[in-house]
Image 1 (cartoon, one colour):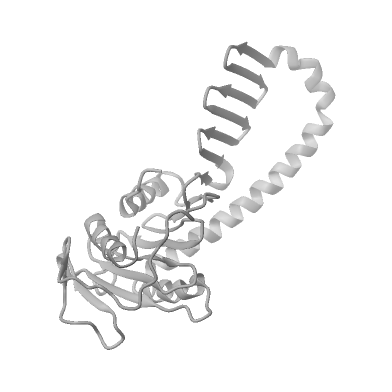
Image 2 (cartoon, rainbow, N blue to C red; image 1 turned 120 degrees about the vertical axis):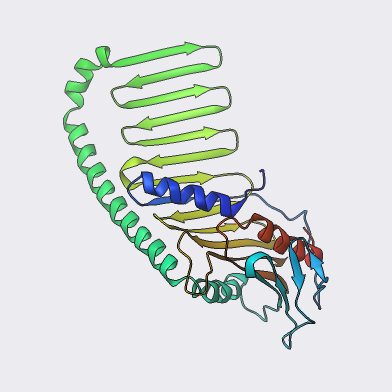
Length: 290
């Protein structure tokens, strides 16, 4: 799958949230295996003087980390993290908590959007249950009128079956199932599940898992590639800077599943920090591999 620029997606989703009632939630899962891409086990960090838009500040810190400065006061810190029996998720949660503390208003906005999404999903499920009951009672009538409300098309490589607000479309490389406000779309290795009532879209690809939650002015993004190694990204971005001027925080993390893992934490003051995150990722790659 083509590499996604997370800050750009976050900003796009914030715009989408404004146009869709203030809440957008996108969740993706992955089942691919990256066992063929072996990451190195390292005991010490490589911290070059410069990397992309970053410049190292002095020598390594007392804890072995390296601190870099970037455009407009951006900060990137490179860490070597030994798991010592912990899961990588537990180790990365510490960094996530530390980073989100720099953008408390954005985090509160994202959590409020999640709460609204859960409430909308619950209401949609209740409506769906009532609709199913009504549909069951109306089966006989639907059968009598289906001739006028249905369509069936069959041709080489194409099949379309539609009845009322339900449709099943099969085309080369594409399959669409629609039922009222809900739709499932599969295009090649990409699956999209949409539910208009809950303002939720689920995207599943064959390459990596992506979870995106966006509200009017903030977005949180997590990625995680399945397999024998740790490959994770976290990003929280907002259109309203914190008191310190931060607009985006996050990390890039990689390493063997048993550790140590390399984590580059990022704090930036521009909403679009693609160059900053690219440089942070390059530092991680330099140390542990791709």
